[in-house]
Image (cartoon, rainbow, N blue to C red; front, side):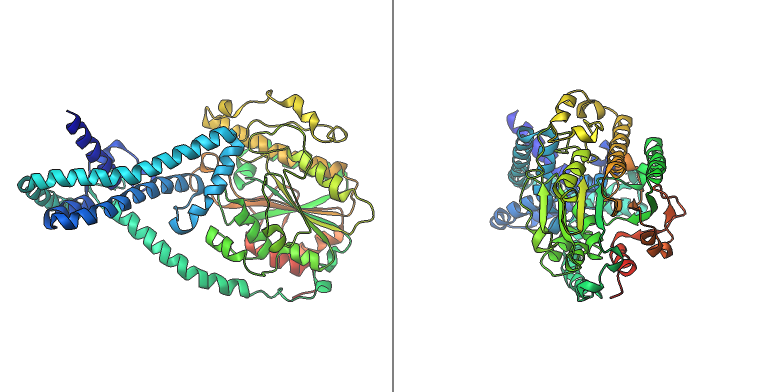
Length: 532
């Protein structure tokens, strides 16, 4: 009985590895009732090869099958959440970021348990699939006559079913080749990635602003503080599908207008979707389409001119405010050229975290004011500010407080345990979408309230999203578009971008322009400088 059970488990494991469909949308129990061409090839190989060759060949084949099964699971996840397939050569680099996200969302203990479980699953599959193949090969070898007949009948059936196009469900053919297709797809991606390195190197080198003298850059913004504020997951869906966010933008426009602040808005197409914000940041800063981790890593070793370096060469003090970072970020100085990088360790926060965010966005802006903008006798400041309260899981959320009471953030301790928790919010998709909208509204209100209360009259703010939220919120077939707004009291600043065609106010409309995110850098430097 034990032998029968082990054989059944081995057959089930290998069968799932061979017939698992290409996408989660195609997941159905009927997918198991297919004929995998790869399985027929394996049986034929076992029958044709001498035992000594099989002993050497089956282990690497089993490891390959296990790897392809793991890649398929990751591919399902990437297609579901990030709207693109998994790339073996570059996406493995996200492992550290995934662990950090899990730790920030669930705590260090659960993150370590999750990492340990992942190691056990991966290691288990890499061992179990080869062992399962060896066991099945032994059974085939002992029943050669029946195996030959069976594989012959199934091979004929495969050819007929493939020719006729019989499927167990739409997109799930009975004559399966999904594992071979996955291996081919990953191989093609590997070749494309190698070629892309050369293509991207040429794009990096082609920069008409690279050697522009500092005095010629950004002359129209001399003496002004410039903030580039990224609102996490602030995508087009927030503007067009949420009444709460729509009302927040409309009321924000009116409140800022009453304070003498004007705004213009449009859309940018982000280079990423559902996550990996640093790709969008790099695209905006460098004027390059940075849509993969490989491109990002390649870029970090170049001297490509970033917006922050352009401001630095023109006389600004440059800082980055990255409240979610808990580790050193060497690229902040080596590539982006920031004079100072503020993170969770240096922003002086003494309150509780809220979901992923170590601190509320309102506190982040208050700290920027205290540490930089409020200092006397200083040069103008250019800052990139990352607001992360609207990062998944969007719960629990803080509330706005009086700016004078913020201090070191201790005021937020009274909110701990009172807002809806992640477990409560994520019980339904409706709850998740509502929490997402509430988090975006909070982040936007923090910015608008900051602008209403700031003492800095020479402030220019570029406010934008980094990417759309995950598909659970964005929906299927969503675009990569995010809102972007330029906010200032200085009318000549807005006159400089009059040719952009951006709409009035903080809420972009369907009629407003849509640019790729990498196109903004050159347009910005052209509008506010004297030319390349």
